[in-house]
Image 1 (cartoon, helix red, strand yellow):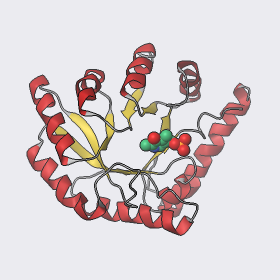
Image 2 (image 1 turned 45 degrees about the horizontal axis):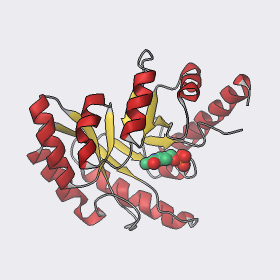
Image 3 (image 1 turned 135 degrees about the horizontal axis):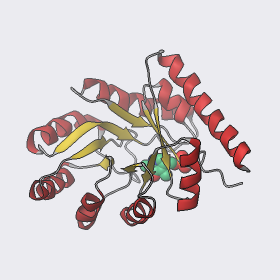
Image 4 (image 1 turned 180 degrees about the horizontal axis):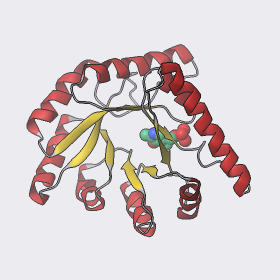
Length: 225
Ligand SMILES: *Cc1c(COP(=O)(O)O)cnc(C)c1O
């Protein structure tokens, strides 16, 4: 794809997000986080020049390398992956705009300790394993609200902004939809939550129609041809 074709392609993605969000209502605003985990710095810079500002990585080392290499650009970095305890300090050094993968009370407590020492805070989303898949991280839907409230109470340096979920891993649209509805129902119950992050390249329109206001788009934002 040349530059013009790429810009038209991104325009088309934005138009699809627009169409889906308007089905919810005119005031429903959706943010696109471009997931750059399979893309290099040059590709990120290209997308930046088209107007994209928020980018997501799922490995702490990659986030560190790319955010450092591109530090002169006003980018907003999200960490969207699974965080191992031994990587907490490295993530806090990078200080991302949003950590989307807080997936247990235990991890929250561990992060809280380090935040306290550093006298800093971190915006986070609680990850929900809405389809209860063994391959996925996240808290179970039935535990989510209690865990969310406990983190709010016990971890003052963690700013919980809402929830994040990955749609059910199946071609059955009804099952995927069900998993999005499960996450959105939890989101609606949470006081003060403002972000419901769900939807990827293959299912973002459905996710938006189910109430998502943040989509994490990888392959569609970085087409390979
Ligand atoms: C890779 C990834 C995405 C983006 O996936 P695509 O299907 O390429 O859009 C979104 N969210 C998470 C958590 C990911 O790991």
